[in-house]
Length: 358
Image 1 (tube, rainbow, N blue to C red):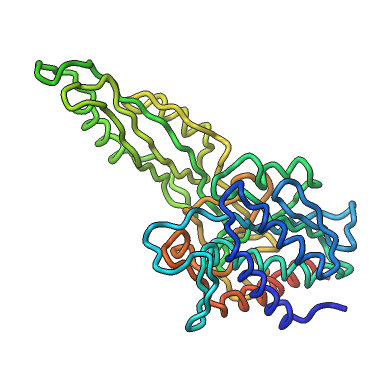
Image 2: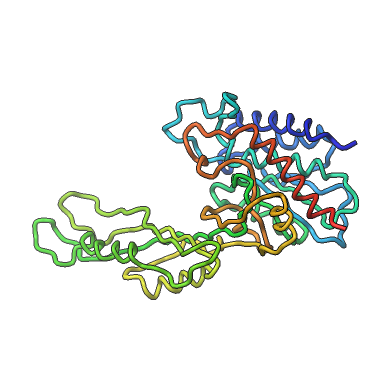
């Protein structure tokens, strides 16, 4: 017997409260994975686990059908110093559920789990459904969703649950982090030096500030490049030989990460070394039936500047979930209970329009 949406909403809230109460930093999610496994067992839905990733297949899985992946993560960042509440105490006040991970991405996770349970034993769907409650999203670690793709059957399309106010993020910027090095001549601070590495940074920083990439995406806008860290020197009387910069580049869908690395290696006025090229931009066609079903529910489309597990997927993917991205990683993080309830309703309606097409 299919569980009612009212019951699913109640149990989703209970699960989210439990997840908030458990510390689950990236690579330390074993106890939240235990809680998610218990949630599946209570519904008599078989699940499997690889390290801290918990996943399940719909009851009538059919190898001849394409597959829809539902995914969100249960790890969190560390709480910041501005918290005035206990980050691990799930408290409800004025319709808000407070707690670390409530908005990013607990609300999306429990809403997707509820949606999966709703469709679990449905027959005649156009796609199979696989759900993965994944680990290590916040750290882009090696044992998160990326590690599951070689275990799962091929995925044709995906919904990645992140806070989007239940609007349709049909594209997402990729990320390349560069270590940059500005060099000079080391010397004693008391002596003349016309090749001071720190002073050489002035023109280099101006170059990063003013540089623009030619291609602008109609959905994601321009590539955004930002110097986020600077480190140099060890003593007050020593001019250092080099200055280390960290440069954060958010890549639109006009470029691959490899292309961005090539451009910067040729044009930047300093040595540039990318840490990784694997977190590429991602997108889904605005005409995809999944997107059209969302538009039919009054949802709007946009391009997201923030990174998620979409970056690990090679298939078309949609980022969609309850909550507001601007609350993510903030002090006293919260999500509205109404957002979770609306999220479950909308996920179900969008998937009904996509999975139950005649």
